[in-house]
Image 1 (tube, rainbow, N blue to C red):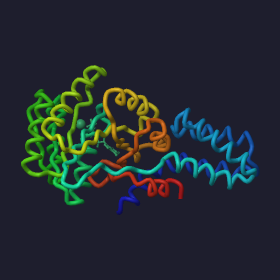
Image 2: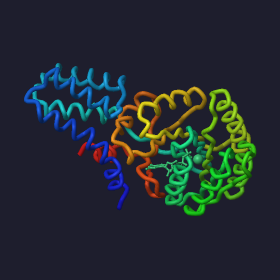
Image 3: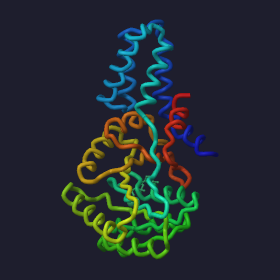
Length: 302
Ligand code: GDP
Ligand code: MG
């Protein structure tokens, strides 16, 4: 099964609960009216598009309906989908520059899917014939280190690890040295999600960033925030907190297969001003790919 089919299967729940409901709604009305708009609002909110984004979508739709004298619900529906498509925007590839290493720092709270996503990203990079090194800088639990190691073996990439409780910045230091020595193309750094307050988080990320800047001054940098799509609007709140602590360059949205409320994908870029770079639609190695907005839109709306 290709990724597009996986994407379609993964988005099936969201599609049923969201797009199909919209289709039913626009079929049920003969003419566009306020009742229809009210029901549309409810569908968008239920799918976790978010209150603010829902208002933006509805305002834009009302404008288009007024300007173009739209009365046919089917025409209005096409306008609605066009608005959502433009909100999703374009995906953004992982930054890379010829002859330079890309360092990807992966952050996010516990359980969102950081470690799994790192394995999957490593797999994507490896398929592009890039040499990948992983850094197990979530040193809080031994199990977290072991988990990354299992994945590293499965994908077939090198991992730099220390023991439980060691300094994450020291792991990054060693990983940077190893990546330089092996002339790696990509270094991906796993981090702990346990950092319960902003001050801790900022201090730890700053320390890691200083090591990267010192050891790999020419590297191209990415800081990816991983968000669990099943947590809906909570993911947005998490993102706003992390945004205050780090310069996030991209989002990884995981577990889209596990939710009927995938509406967050439509609004998240608009709400945060950060592009989605990867989406995860399952637990296996091949269940993540670089976010292709066009594929995503056709998997969801067509
Ligand atoms: P971390 O604590 O952020 O490192 O999260 P993990 O990578 O350990 O993942 C937590 C759980 O989420 C694991 O059971 C993963 O298999 C699961 N998971 C991660 N990504 C996805 C996804 O895209 N879909 C599904 N269904 N499960 C996922
Ligand atoms: Mg982890």
